[in-house]
Image 1: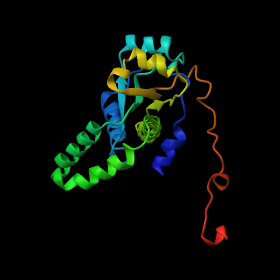
Image 2 (image 1 turned 60 degrees about the horizontal axis):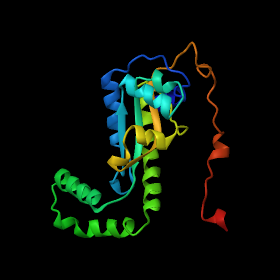
Image 3 (image 1 turned 180 degrees about the horizontal axis):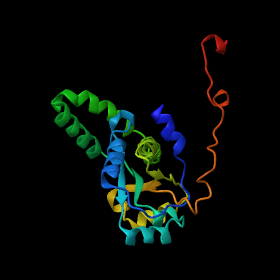
Image 4 (image 1 turned 45 degrees about the vertical axis):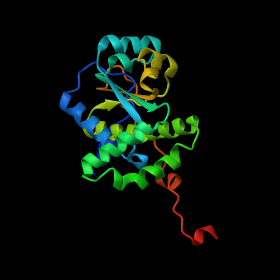
Length: 215
């Protein structure tokens, strides 16, 4: 019930008040995001954390005119890998061997299965897949922020090529997908502060199926 209470509390804040979020709350949100589910466990993305005010102003001017960018405490940029390489898999395998205490040799078939499934697809297909993976992490960040009672605003409405150029993401093999400002709602200036949350009724959203219902 506490989770539902926090999810009812959260909304996409339209204005933030500039108050800084305590580092321990940010660390909790980031760790929850790191622990997020990911297809095959690969996590084909990076998350850029920005709190520098000068850089936030540049992002606001050049890529996203929304006020939360300069009013937030921290900005998370979810950026997918532009291309998949064998090194990505080698690094993933190395993480598994280190954290699970198994040998590289024991994972040879596992790696081959990954390579056959992903490296045979086009660059565009792999980027689209990686971009979809970022939204799972974004969802985890949203829930974690709500539990910490930190406001957040998921954003797609920004100039991704301009942001990529500003942050030099191409050189890192990344393309930005979404933004998540973190901070505190501006109670005096946010017109949605007191608005009731509107969601579809459960009987209209959920469809329960059985084998018989398909006949």
